[in-house]
Length: 300
Picture 1: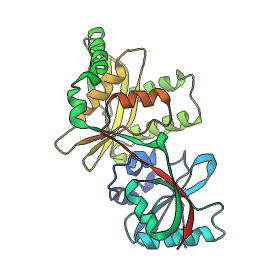
Picture 2: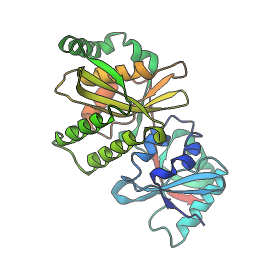
Picture 3: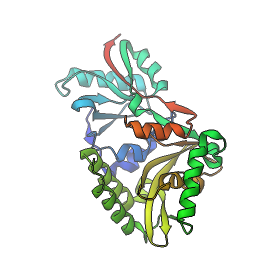
Picture 4: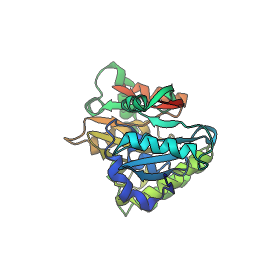
């Protein structure tokens, strides 16, 4: 029988090797993508048959599982079926954060299932080379915003995040949240975890950079991590009073952390926000990394 435990910061060393096995460039299967949102979705984890299995709360508090990863996946799904048939699981069996490559795995185990594309949570994947060059008409607006920022703030600079500036980033983030008139519980939870990342950069295997408009004025910062050939941007916060700050921050972060091993940049999802969707589409993603919720499963 599966035994689930609460996912805590201290579990990163034992969980991270399994996350690295996922080949689909989904932000949810990175350390940052998993641990920043672990409490928002009430993540629990179990190891079984050589697999890592997550149990979480998704829409309206519904319980869902992830497709087993790392070992005998067929046995892992059988154990999930067994768990759901027991008194330890209330509600319908369903799988969340299912990538396209995982669909055949489920189809091989279940006789019938319904798949729902979760468009609001598709990841935006870009070619690093295109974001570095910003060529063509499609990137004209971005180039113009960057030029305007550079004209208004000619002494702007980037600084790699180190221990010396972390207190200033904590203060910037607090002001950012205070000034967000639409801040909700999810906003506060995300901010709490960003503070956690800043205090545990090594454990999160994270890196980042801060954007300064002047010598001591921080106007934004980003945090990310590497996984395979992809640079993941987990955090991107900027002061919109400084027009062009987001464009400068995004392109500067990619320029700073793209190396010979990086082919793609994953800037995560838009969470259904129309403005964010328009912005992320404007950078010309090479593709959207699809995610599915799978339910109404019938055993073979």
